[in-house]
Amino acid sequence: MVNSRVESSAVAVTGGSGGVVRSCAGCGGRISDRFLLFSMDRYWHTRCLKCSCCQAQLGEIGSTCFSKGGMILCRNDYIRLFGHSGACSACGQSIPASEMVMRAQGNVYHLKCFTCATCRNRLVPGDRFHYVNGTIFCEHDRPGGALLSSHLTPLQSNTLLPDQKVKP
Image (cartoon, rainbow, N blue to C red):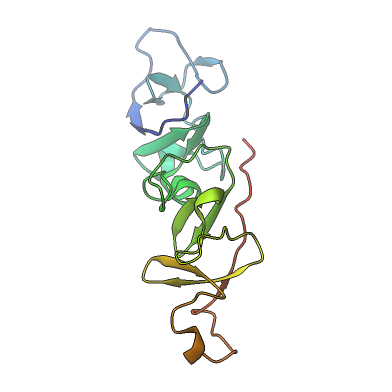
């Protein structure tokens, strides 16, 4: 089982087994295909090394894959779930694969870290907030709040929605 730290692994396409019998890490079956994949120190059928989220065959879409929390992910799903670094944008700590997160403008946060920069109140799904120059503000503490009209444009205000948990 892969631990919760992030591992980036190359996906190498190699020729047939050359007389050596190899077992697929995905299905456990014998690999007798002309081509096989080698990633995360294991061999795979080309059809078995798939992203846990989108089911894309990783050998066909790129030369790297990511593993975290027992999931194997393509680059796009890894970034969608964990941000570019896999760390919380507020505290910098790693975000476990099974943890619910909050998102704002492409950044990912622990639930406990998604707080107003002024009053430090935690924002929850459904709360309106403002994201100004990388900083989160609640509706009450938004900068220049008195100058804004009550009709906010979508760029000035967001409604929080938690990410769905990934089902492997």
